[in-house]
Image (tube, rainbow, N blue to C red; front, side, top):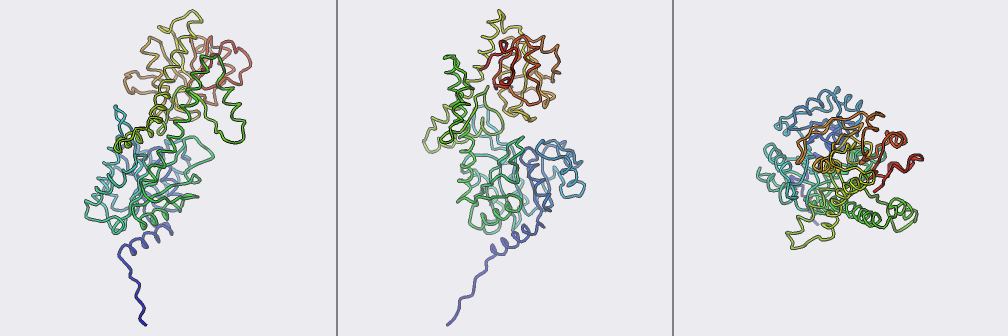
Length: 451
């Protein structure tokens, strides 16, 4: 009786060769985009022995990496410096070096256009460069947040223009970043990683790559499933924040302390997760990701009304903050026009140096347009450059007793831990607190107005 010989295909050989290089960490990893996602990823890969080449169009950022000069708070200065000195991490603006990489990870921004449509131009530009230098046996993964279908509908056709075929000549996957700036407990290494491959062998190779530095890798059936997973995670947060923000607006009319209500509800040991109200939503995910989903849904003649309503509420609360300041000043027989408003905190959340999509930026511009004289203090943000419709350049104001006393209103938009709120309450004539940062203040509470 004859036994059939096992057929070994070229893709099997390519996949095995790459998996072997991944498992013994001899592969070269390319990371496109050296920002909040890309640089921490590059460092994690370098720490376990991978040779890493970082790519960025920003020459100044490339120079900083090559000098071991860290600019991302979630990266340890000494780790980046050691890796660059050892030559484990280098950076370049020359995309021809993609040909030297066994793995290429895309970690570029995915903002929204002025009409709130997805802007995937950075993904497209990166894919165009990869296609020029794509070689057999290479793995390409996308980590940038995007709408379901991007990997298959946008990246795959661009890469296959090279003449190479996915799953046979090269491997393609989507694995969404899960970065929470400032989170000391969950980092790149110990945050579960979802990954979806274009083919089963693509998934197998991508899983092997991420398993070298991630504690728990979660495979899903396709890149689209992984893409939707990421968008859902942040839409979930956006909707729940909108719910508590809407409750805040109601509590304001009813004269009930929203913070007391949410804290009391949070004592229930089941069936509830605590979300806090605030002046709006910020960061690289929550204000943007839901719009990627609503945009894609229209292709299927489906309108995500619940999600869109949440977005409207989270925008509305920024205008509520302005009204709250106006009412607080009115009670002091003052007008917002020509009032001196000192903003405390402009980062999108506490204890980080990130202002991306921060509601503080919008609120500051609304205050300025209503005639207020604004200044800000944020120990993590030395300067605010012109943004959106604003042409104003602002520099950080020292939080002196004189600055506090001179303000008609101190507006707390980000509750940084390093600020002495007892001193703020003692020296400032009026405080509007959008984060309940003053909850521990015992004296001068008559000066404090909470949203």
